[in-house]
Image (cartoon, rainbow over all chains, first blue to last red; front, top):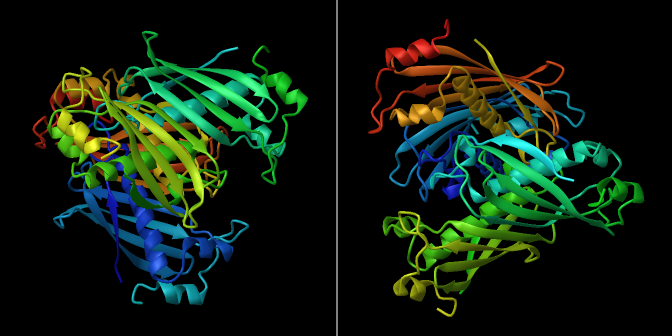
Length: 132
Length: 132
Length: 132
Length: 132
């Protein structure tokens, strides 16, 4: 399953090189996974209310082509892993012409309110499972 | 009393106009007031531990001259009001030549843990008082 | 004329107080004025291509009520002045219940490519004029 | 060679989980490599004046332990590769107790003013070489 989210680049996202600052792609990734979870019928807020946290344990991004001010970007988000205590998201950012500008991944640990890593509940895996 | 803090501008602070993005001056203001409180002998973390919060109720900034990438900026922070339930900070941002680039203000309400606005404790006013 | 833009709050917009960080409202204001200009038929990119810049000379914001993670915010943008070499925008940020969370203003100078402040062209005033 | 840079965490760096937002570590990485180049006797500004750019082509970060508001962080920066048209930086972020909180890498392409990837000049490699 792929979820698409749209974002229009503002000045505040760019730097003086004239394109989106490299750290800001990770904000777009977060937007993507929020929308992904919403599409799957659960908001991050609901996950939090269940006492679960999904802190990022790893993130990476490959920058292929710059994104510019005023570009209307699409973030395509997938889950590539939801097993044990780990969830992995994969993201692709494209411009209006469909050109791939950047791709990346984040890995998240499932953590309870006390901060302890714990296995994903079966019902959560079912919702998130990559083959779902 | 004036407290001076130093900050070196990174790429991530600039935008494609080639200078520091207007919203990022407010990050510098926050850095300035953190350092101010620390100089006065109390960290914001300690204020929080006392169950107090100082959310911003108002902010403003005048931009006189641009700040550039790699500039070593000085933030000069003063308290101009500490009365009732309000604290007001005043900031000036200068470059290495001492040129004034921007000035601004923030007003803060003194709020307890339940979110209720309440008068500043006399001991806090004494520490923060502008004439102090 | 009022232009409305929607924005869903992400984690990256909040701080540890649990609501949107005070500087990030200015990012929303920028989004609002971009959309405003687009609605009026000219993008900021086009303004730039004409060799015009609209750097911010002043900004302010009043924070009335916090905005939370996952809130769907509406930014309402108006122009309150377009005269001489100055443009002034006014913004209101509301949540899904229509509650006013914050309001603010930005003032911009009309600057040519060499950085000189210059009067707004009549055709630009006509497009932007508050009564328009 | 290792270069150490200090940074005090502000509110604006944190999110509502109560620690530094995952994307903001990349801002610290940028600060680290700016300081690294400065230590080696060349500022990024000078690199730019030579008509060179070093856009990021890849970035990653592993998050081991959270960084909190008011923490005084040390960014330790090394160059692990400076060959052909590529430079690779490696970063470690530690707190005041010397605990490793996060580590990461960025890869940069050497690009001339026209945007063409080109081999690093021997003099630049000499300055940057990992064994240097």
